[in-house]
Structures are given as C-alpha cells and as structure tokens.
Image (cartoon, rainbow, N blue to C red):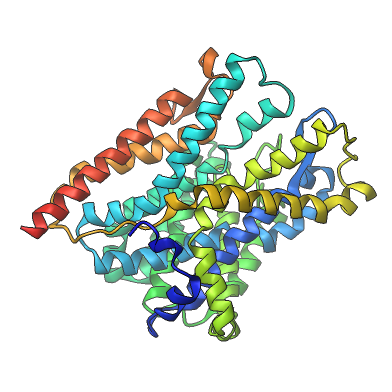
Length: 438
C-alpha cells in the first residue's frame, strides 16, 4: 500500500509495541534536527554569494560545538538500531537491503534531481555566484550517509565481536584510533589518519551495541571521562577547539576524525544516557510520541534537502535585490529567526514533494544467500556516495574530480558507483527473499 508511510502519525503511534525504546527514536530525530539547525545557523553568506562559516567569523562560538556537534549521537543510535535489526533479520543480503531502502532511495532521488539541475545550469551558463556555490555545497552532507552505509556493512561482524567481547570490542576500536593519532602526530606517518574514519565512527557505533544489551551502566563515568579526555587533548595536543570542520585549518577534528572527536562522542553518549529517564517520560506522552513518529518518517528527506532550502532562501534574498548584512553583525543576528523560519518552510515544501521515496517497502526474510554480492554492492554504494560528497555537482562538463582513497573520481563516476552498488544489494536481497519463500 503506497500510502502506508502516510498513515496518520496517530495510527502509527498507537500501533507502537510497549517494548519499543521510544527514547532512541527521540534521540534520532533530535540529533538530526540539531544538525540541520546548526547548518542553517553556521552559514554566513556574503553579498557576493560566497558562503563562509559563522564559527570562523566568531571563533568564540566554537566552544558551543562541544554540545551541538551531535553526529556521534546519531551514529550511537544507529548502532542500537542495527543490532536489533540484524538480530531480527540475520541474513546479510536481506539485512543490507532493508537498511539501504530507507537510505539510498531518497538519496538517489536527491542526486537525480540535483544532477539534472546542475547539467541544465551549466549548459545555459547559469552556474555562477551563489548557484555555483550551491552546486559544490549541496552534496557535502552526503559524507554522513556514506559513513552510515559503512556502519551498516560492518554491523554483522562487529556485532559478533561485541557479543563475544563486550566492552573489549569497543576498546579495540578505540585503541585503533589512539594508534592512528600517535602515528599521525608523533611519527608523522602519511595518510594513516584516514583510518580513523573507520576506527572513530565504528567505535561510537559500537556503543550503540552496548546500549542495546544494557551494558552502559555508568553513564556519568562515560560522560566525565569523555569530557576530561577531550579537554586535555585540545589543551595539550594538536587538536583544534572546534568539533566541526573549519575552513583552512591544518588539523580538523572531523575530517578525518580524531581521538578528540571520539572523546567528544563518549561525553555526548554519556550525557544522553544520563537524560534517559526524563527523556523517556517526555516521549511517553501521546502528543510527543506522535510528533516523534511523524518526524522519523521524513527525517532523511529533510536532512537531504535542508541545504537546498537554506541556499534557496539566500538566493531569493539576493535575487530580490536585498543587501545581505555582514555575518555576525547586529542586523545579521536579527534576521536569523526569519531566515531559519523561511528555510524550515521551504524544507517542508520539499519534504512534501519527496517524502514518498522514504516510505518503507515490504521485505521478506532471506536465506542468507547473496552475501558476497551484497557486500560488493554496499562497498560500491558507500564509495560512490562519499565520492559525490567530495566532488559536488560543479564542473560536470569540465571533468571536475576529487581524490577518493588516492583515486580521482568525477561526479558521474560517483553516481554510477552508487547506483551499481544499490542495484547489486537489491538483487542479492531479493534473491535471498525469493529463495526463502520456496
């Protein structure tokens, strides 16, 4: 039934089993909402259409990233959800297909729409100013989806390690992050830092497994250790204050991730676990739970299109002849509620148009066959999505490329990788499902 995703939130909320951990759903929605609001607020667009970063204009605000850089919370929640999903659907191909449908369907629609628009804009020579900036920027948040796909891919083996070693499996990943930063900053080994895209984010993801099995019993200790560790690393080591990437900085805590960011993740996970009691009571309220259910049904679509909406608002301001105030000036701050309100409305319009592609599709249990094909597929998909996040849609006609793991990749090649990977996972998952019904 194509409208199942549009059943009223009231009906879906009423059908929620009593065993569901609603606080996790609240964290998922809240963390993405904070990311979206952060992107809207940090964008400092000048009168010539160039987009800067508010945190660079007002460096004192970098400290707030220690609270509002909440991507670790989303990955932590992902670990929790993936543990439960894999245990209910252990066949690898079927598990991957079910996870990828909610991720790649709306993502590939976003890519198709923006790719077509980029081609038209460049053929007509209308890709200058803010439009050209948009073509470079709108794909940047796709790095998050690429990393999330990697987490999905590694869930089965890492979950097995968790079930055998518990906190020891997390410690091994954290130890890998420590070793990478030692090799990077003390021994100056080139390129080793990129391994922390795996070690740091998979360690945070592993905390979700621990949460799923009730093994985070001292969240205050976790939060305190993470906060003290991050503060010490920033104060005494080569790590910057900001927990988000800053333009022109030699070292970023985000790209690639550092040990300081892992400590930041521990602090946030401990903090949200400390708030678990009041959070659970809040989301137990019928109205709040209905809002969370409704938001979860459109969260990925809103995330994909929120930068489009923000740049659309700025584009409309410039097209109307409005003079943009200097970032961080009094007038700029006064306009913040209006700009964010307009971006929220435009995001709502885009969500209404594209939300259907986030609707879950019915799946059938598989036999476990097709695992190698599915593994190849998700590998290609995550490489394609990461590559596109780096290249953007600018320079489609001139062969613009970016380097992905030492290999130059263009936007069309990245899209091709993502599509091929998705189709392989779909094929493997359907084959397993079909075999399982015989």
